[in-house]
Amino acid sequence: MSARAALRSIPRVPLLAGLGLLLFTLFVTDGFGLLGRADASPHGAPLRMRDFRFEDRADGAIVARDAASNAEVEVFDPGTNGFVRGALRAMSRPRRQADTGRDVPFRLAVWRDGRVTLEDPVTSRTVELNAFGETNKDVFLKLLLIEGSK
Image (cartoon, rainbow, N blue to C red; front, top):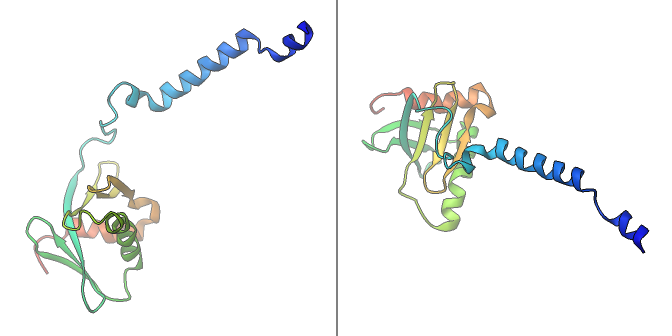
């Protein structure tokens, strides 16, 4: 019986070493969260940020409006800008499912490191648009650079 018990027990030194490695890994990968600094952005403040409302028109176009002034910034004609349509549909779906936040604008930002992000303040979801290629990112980046209304 003692030989069987010896085979089933785990040696203490490797067990403690493995546990230590696990705790070290958790600390390294989520150290800021454990220290209470999870909300600190490692990228600093955005270079430029703007809030937009996107409206569907009866003819199938999508109108991008500046949330502060309600000025029309860009019109995406029907059958064009498939990436914009897909991204907005994906970001809007959780809002529709929860039936909340229809009037809350989306936040578009460009960062010091060149990233362009689209954020939904209602769901706290952020999409890094650079991941979808320069052409797709540039369509959204253009919205940040357009001044006034069309």
